[in-house]
Length: 205
Image 1 (cartoon, one colour):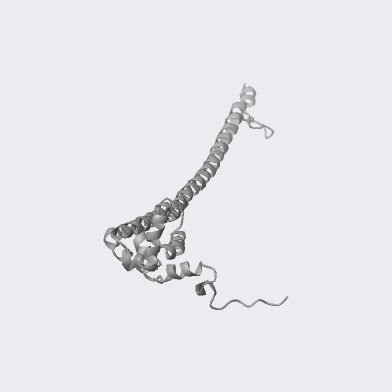
Image 2 (cartoon, rainbow, N blue to C red):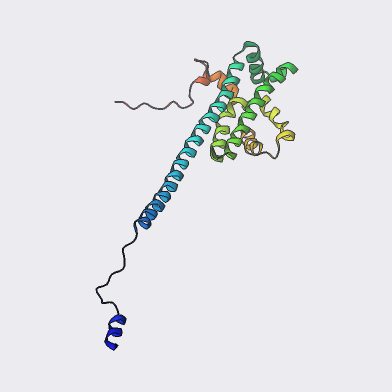
């Protein structure tokens, strides 16, 4: 009787092994891994789409910005409007109220275009440095005259405190008021202004 009990209570031998994982557990692990990979892949695709959309949005907004400049230039090509614009550069003291209003509409359009750049900055589409560079590049060709600089001085009440005005104000105040006059004269071939003050020397080959 004693021998029988001992044989039943004996511990399993060292050769015993744990049972292998069930097939369902393996499938569950693979499904979990696949789901995690799907989430990562989805995030990557989303990031790519966001960047593509941002690039398209920037291209569209830049196109609209350039369209404003194009419309200004096309408008100035009209003989009557162009005459008022030239008068504001060559003989501002002879301008009529209508001339002043005509020129003003184009300067306002440019200011709104500059302000548009800061809206692009708020959206993260351009940097502050890019907005500054754009103002620096365009300001001389529209505000580089005594009349335009005088007109700008009257705009503080309506624009003071805005990012556009705070950046453009010192740029415009530093402009040469004869820039546009010299530009017009220099654009005419054969004029004294069209010749560089110190023409570069050409090296002999």
